[in-house]
Length: 201
Image 1 (cartoon, rainbow, N blue to C red):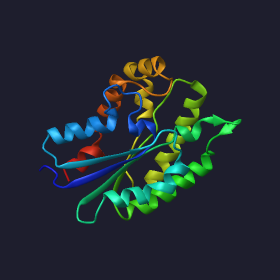
Image 2: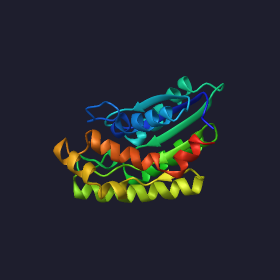
Image 3: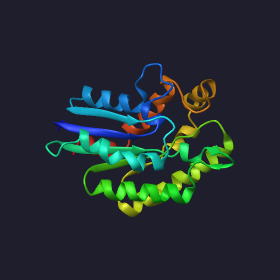
Image 4: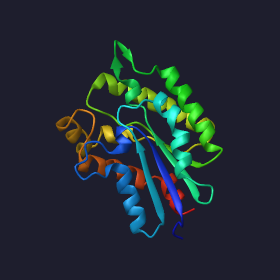
């Protein structure tokens, strides 16, 4: 049965924003476009901000979401962040792993008591050393989500094997793909049991 009056906030960084996509859809726009074509009544808010870390998101997410998700509707949030936390600046990660875990636990613990939520892992980039840090972070985020009973999708592992993703990231800015890469990302989320369960609940 199609969803009715569902409002979804996608909260995260430049990958949520869809930076680099010449079609200005990213993966979030693509999965919502598909859902709407399937007959679901969705209002979609993209709250992705470039360069933001989990610390930035922890400070802003609730106020921004609360303005967009009134109690009168079916309120949902999909979180995805982490790559910026692992970026090296001044000789160290912008956010240490322990702090990212703390931020994530705080965000999700509050959110799950008020909204229906999902989380998607950070994706891979070009740099091998940073990818190692992203992979470790993704594994830690999976553990937190399991502890909180929040559905979690690992896109890092399959995107590392995606020709479309890696080729476009390398050709662009070494971080973000173009349309084909985001389409590969969107396909992973669209085929995720938790996303399908959201749409059919």
